[in-house]
Image (cartoon, rainbow, N blue to C red; front, side):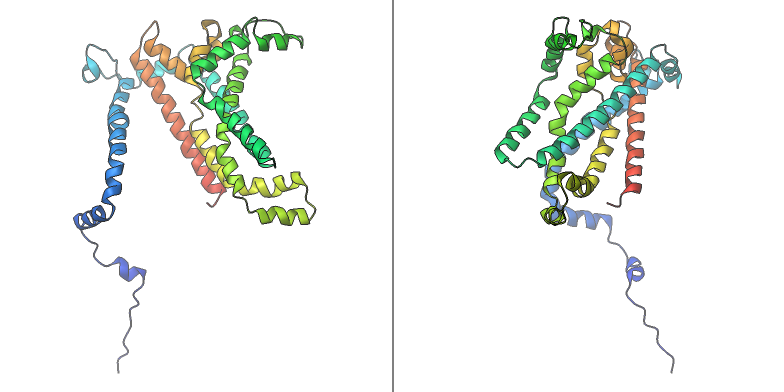
Length: 322
C-alpha cells in the first residue's frame, strides 16, 4: 500500500495562502482603528502641508533663482551654486566653526546631563533633590533673547564675569568682541550646557530610577562602595538609553544654536562665530542677497545631518542588540 505523505501546515504553507485584497484589509483596518486614524489626520496634514510640499523649494539650490521669474521660471544651473559655495572664501571658516562648536556642545552638554543625572540619583534627601531638579530645568525655558542679553551684560567690558576673570589676571575686555579661538566657542558651549544639562538629564534620571534596587543591595552586601555601584551597575544599565540619546544628538549635531549665535556675534567675530545656519541666513537676508546660494548651503547642511544620523544609527545597531 502506498505511503501517504502528510504535509505540515508550517509557515511555508501558510505563506502560500492567498492574501486578502488591499481594499478588504483597509476597510477592516479602518473599522478597527478608525478613531486613531482620525486623531492622526491633523498631524499628517501638518507634515504634508508644512514639511513635504515645501520640499520642492530645494530646487532653488540648483537654479539661478530670481524672485521675478519664480521657481519654475528660473534657469537650471545644476551644481554651480554648490561649487560657488565650497570655493567661497568664508566657507572653510564657517565649516570649521560649525564642527568645533557642534562637537564641544555634544561632548560638554551630553556628559554634563549624564553626570548630573547620576549625582542627583545619589541624593537621599527627597525634598532637596526635587528642588535641585526643578531648578535645573528652569534655564531651558528662558527665552533665547533673555539669555543672549544676560550673556552680553555679564561678558561685557564691565560685566560681572569679566570682573571675576580679571581677578585671575585675565585682561579686562568685552569677551564677545574677542575674535580669537576659542573664546566665542567656549561662550556658546558653556551657555548651551547651562541651558540644557538639566532638561537633557530627564531621560537619564528616569532610566536610573528604573534600575533594579536589588542589584545595589547585593553590591552593598559584597562591600561595594558608592563609586563601584555607579561604575558597575548604574552606568552599564543605562547604556542603551545613552546610545539612543547619543544617536539623536549626533543627527542634530549641526544645529548649534542659530538664534543665540545670531544675537551674540558681531562682524569682528564672524571669523570664529559664523556657522552654517547664520551663514545661510546672511546670504538670504543680508546685504548681498543670494537665495540660490543660501538654499545650496541649507541643503548641504541637511544632507550632512541626515548622513550623520544614518551613520550613528548604523553604529549603534552594530554595537548593541536592542
